[in-house]
Length: 304
Image 1 (tube, rainbow, N blue to C red):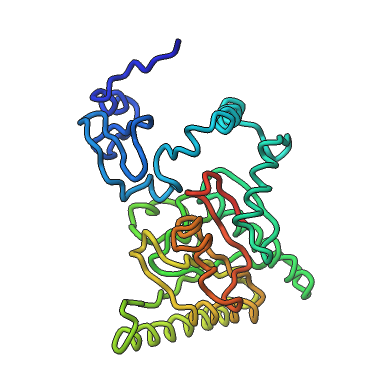
Image 2: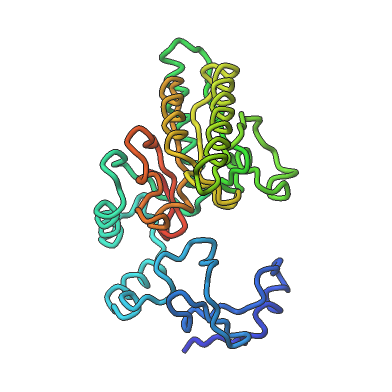
């Protein structure tokens, strides 16, 4: 019978032989961790977990309704062992997931789903959808060559570290330096601080006006070239930067006026973290996105 052979205090030393093991000095015990506490088997301690694996743990550790449901665990094990190619081979388990997702998380205004492994790849596919749509729009308008590949994005954004997303992410230089990137338009992010009154409100309004002016200029400077505006409803890695509904409404209006998609990157803000399934559900219909990218707590990534 299979048994673990690496002791808890040897995990880092074992990993260091082959990978850059510069993570936390602990050994996460997947069996003993419970609820909001992660158990460290290296130092035999419980730690209150504010990390949640980069916001990827939706229900805490070992939720009783999951670990005590043998049928659920059996189906999860089948999927883990087979790792089916769900794009071409369909299963009852896959259909059950989509049915449940439709009930709890797919809004009526975004009925179509695409699934993939990885939050950055979810964002990439949102961009690909926007590019495909914009290029065809431009052909219909009379353009003879492919045009419409640029993505307008914001300072201090984090959208991933692969392919197209390298041109968007700009939190820490070390995450993108020395990699090829596209020169896509980047604009300032509004400064929203709480309580949102008096000087804080004035600062928010003034920085929103500046950002909107930059967005308008970017569209003017890149006529028919911008396929999408992408933004996190709350910038997460970029510094917990919140946005007002009034600003997002203006973005939606500008996207519509310039035939571009408004993409919300909800990889980190989605799946209940803000009190609603999607962060953007706190806002009115006028601030709704054309595409939402999701991942992390969904345990699968993709777009709606």
